[in-house]
Length: 476
Ligand code: ARG
Image 1 (spheres, rainbow, N blue to C red):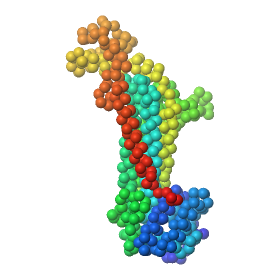
Image 2 (cartoon, protein in one colour):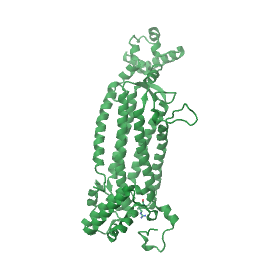
Image 3 (cartoon, rainbow, N blue to C red):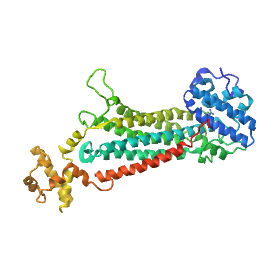
Image 4 (spheres, helix red, strand yellow):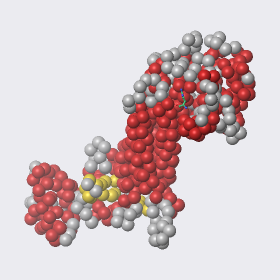
């Protein structure tokens, strides 16, 4: 069994079961890149400040890079007895380079070290999530453009309401994802603050240079209070809430996908390669991906609740409870990234059945508002026009016909204001075309949204590349 790095005060080694319970190496090993990059920056600073020698620094850095290579190559065995990623690396370094390895942890605690690693890890993954949001936005734009002429019913209360462009519906999700992107940009900003140098909780007696460490690791800010630096998990709660809201958006889209590909709607057809069958019912083609994304939303929201509950009521500064931040954040990162990637694929493989969506707006009363608006444009107050249109719908239901099937005499009997042009006014294409108010569903407004979307995506792409370039890479 490996000897504990903090073993001096103890007369017994840790009980194996207790150690299994408290060790985090099985999951925090994911942060090896950040841990090593952070240690290299720390050692470089220690030498610059004259706290360790240049020679020691050189051996430490070379030793750390060697460990990095071993981990990347899968030649590093992580030991549960060494608790976590920080001590696994430090112990192995000391085994390899001797005394110099023992100087690395000068002016540092695992409390500020783990905070540093987690900040760097989340900063990097935030950019990865943003890249995938951007690709999903591109998939929505592609789908909107591919079906730019398709008209479908828009719904309220899940009842057909007014005809809209299918592209308009897609672009609603684009807008949601734009806010998600911006939320993650905010997460990045508030995560971009360096905790190292806080020590265990109160700072350090050594003349460290935190600005220099921050510069090396591309941090914009430095925690100005050491207690806050090691206790803060706001950036994790923020990441988890941005992730939850994003998943809620994907879940709403999933619900619509599931409805639309049901026999009852039949608005879309998913690619065979994106669905699964039933082991018993031969006819089945199930939208499992959408169901899973909808299902996984609960899991991500659960991680947010868990983290908030963990932090609530926790006294300053570090408490081991905080180690519970990792599995939820890692699982959230995996879930969100996978869901985004998979959904972009679903959209790109999806076919819209325009003959069905067209029928849904033709054999329907979703043009009733337009009938009322027609009368308003002829001078009738809207409230009266609404009543006339309501009566027309009532009459048609009794006569078992649609508004557009009424004769001119029937129209005139309802209001003398009706003229021949009423039929054009209530055709679904006209209903769509006339909703030309800013942000409406008209062809022109949707074109405007698509143009804007391309500008937005270009700006997002530039922001993502700039931040991606700032992330820690050990062997450069
Ligand atoms: N594995 C720990 C965590 O993730 C590292 C910090 C441990 N610090 C301590 N004083 N036990 O929180």
